Image (cartoon, helix red, strand yellow):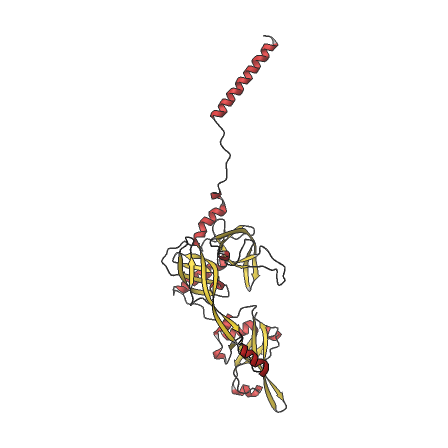
Length: 386
């Protein structure tokens, strides 16, 4: 066979092979490329697992706003009489989030979401749009936690308190709640830090997940659907400056919440006694560094006071807020803020509401001798509670 014939045979063989390969490929096409299913994304699965336990909280609370009567102002300006303080009571809506922690309808949220709402209406809305009345059954202002009870029969879906997130720095976290009224919203970020302090709360978790007004009280979870913490605070400015701060928010850790929630449910069910309220005398000592005692007639005469009501400042702790404000032993404490302090046994329980970092005006009476005359002078001191 000559060379042209051989070349032709080769070309025919190659064409036949190509045709056979093409036919085989047409009969057995390759599988399509794999496409990731969004339904299997870890965040999507975690949200589907946890969002049914999240609720929107709509509460109303009473707020007392000081108002000035124009007649009182005029009288004070021209005649030197003290201006009367009047307070306008108004109902203020409070929007926040929460989540079921018990199938019987117990909900955990922030205390600041429902504070002073015991006698007012609280409504919660679940993921399916159903609305139920709820009642605040226990609260803790120091930890900014509150327990609500839905006035309806369960069971309700809830987040577990016995399987918590390990809370590793850098792990993915998901914030669930109702920011600025957008119910059942989700944002994601990472766990940015631990043991932070903000707004008089310590031991907080830091995250860059978007937390906005209305998210307070909602859960922060990991991609396994385990509880990381309770969303609480967003920082808008760095420190006390006006420098804007972005992606800084805080949550109360789950390990802090778990024991507190179990005790709160037991107290709400009557299975455990609540802790005794703070002693007002101890509050004055611990918050301001002031020790007080009753102003007896003998002490009033010894210190030069007439017939006045108040408690005697028996001692002032060195380097305390009271000492920094110039308060000294021998003065009479007449009032803390707008709460009078007539005697030790009648110290108002509202003193327990004073929180660290809160600036309070103390009304004091001091005795001044001028020759044989004794004058009692009333003054005010601004003191920041520690």
